[in-house]
Image (tube, rainbow, N blue to C red):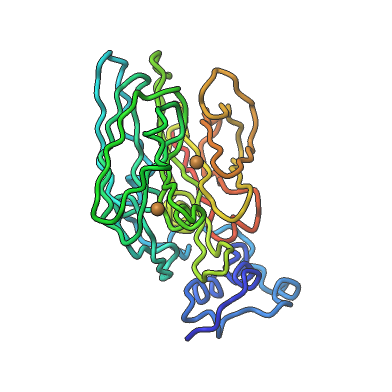
Length: 335
Ligand code: CU
Ligand code: CU
């Protein structure tokens, strides 16, 4: 059995701003014991200049190979113009599934439809949402949606046992960026295991066209000590550092952002090289113009970026610790 690394050791070990070699070695637990850096590593690496200290990008990054499943989580379903009386149907199946949360690090997740986060649910305000939920997992689960709906559609009291189904049905409102997650107890465990996702309700008056992305900030406690060992958006650590997101300067980039990180009270999103309009919860026209937003558990909002420059720009949690454990990525802005 490999020895467990403390969170501090893991942070030191996976710091992407240090030399690439130690990261590749300790990113997976098998090699972690041998490669665990000494406490003096940070203070004594001045001679490493030239092989470290730069942010890593592309193939050098210890993340998983490109995955159609993960890529799909980044792109929301298409917005549909408001039409009275429309029904939007989704099927969510809770399944226990081992997922790769960092290169070579597997996590026994509980998922909706096989990924953590689960699929993006999207509707236009006043669409009738009908969500068919089947529990194919080994524990009782529910789906609790944020938003306005009747008490018996709230996913708290109607717990769905393994092998059973439940249909949630309610008009989608209010418009904004929301979220959904399991509300069975113990709640912290059911959420942290992976049962959560983004829930977008579009206003009847459509937002202006944009390159739309969804980012669900999450973390994974892979050693069961109640602290996250890896952080990310949409699943695997460092995924968009290895696979940067190409966007066009000529069109607004709109990011639907939610914080589903367990254990840590706060998470954040910081953009390099530009500012964005931040609409808290996406439910009004009010925005803040900034380059950093802080979200507590369950908080979410919409970012709109009009990139002024082409080039490669980093985005990451401004908690350096989170960034160095996987919550970082790059935009490749092109003309
Ligand atoms: Cu659950
Ligand atoms: Cu919630």
